[in-house]
Length: 278
Image 1 (cartoon, rainbow, N blue to C red):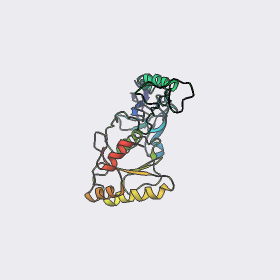
Image 2 (image 1 turned 90 degrees about the vertical axis):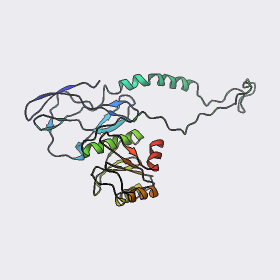
Image 3 (image 1 turned 180 degrees about the vertical axis):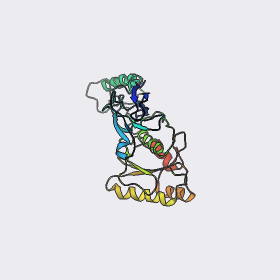
Image 4 (image 1 turned 120 degrees about the vertical axis):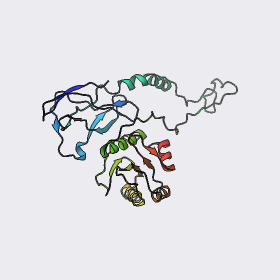
């Protein structure tokens, strides 16, 4: 359970008990940015992308990522930025307990590798016992199958900022870690970058057009250089028929989002991205 801390509004003096929201890490464990106890909160008057994200470490797997800056809405109308500490101390304990058995199994597998050659194989030393009849001399362990992911935990979308947050969390769930806002903003919406990924989020109440899809794809191809970059589109209002056709031609994954905060794939490229991950 995320611990609560007392927060006093500097505008009206009201006291609040505040617990930061938890978000799912790529490993599935909940991560809540640790609130700095006793720190002075400040009212938000101007927003910048640099102030919208904080860095926190998952207590279950050790991944370091960017998470939404904790905020508190006071009854007086002030929006307060809640300072956070540098690391997560309590988050992920449940994830460690849930994965404890898996760690033990992994240690056992490390002691007895599954892809070791059984006695009696072609490369067995002279004099070693032969494998029992009917058993192959070597059983390789598949290494190309993607690791299973836990179910995505949605976050309610109430405004454009929530839409960007959901898209960033969904990309982390797919395996694109350390998501951040792009340095160059598009004519409409927002863009998110990660290693090997450029995504655009369109929160406007209009269908995404063919031109929007083409601009995202061209930007991804221009900025890719020698490193392959996948681009994906997240839209609240869906896509025009022309946009869907062009996205299928270019191989751009398209997702739609609604107030529940769960992105839904709408073309085969998106289905493939969800199945394969990063």
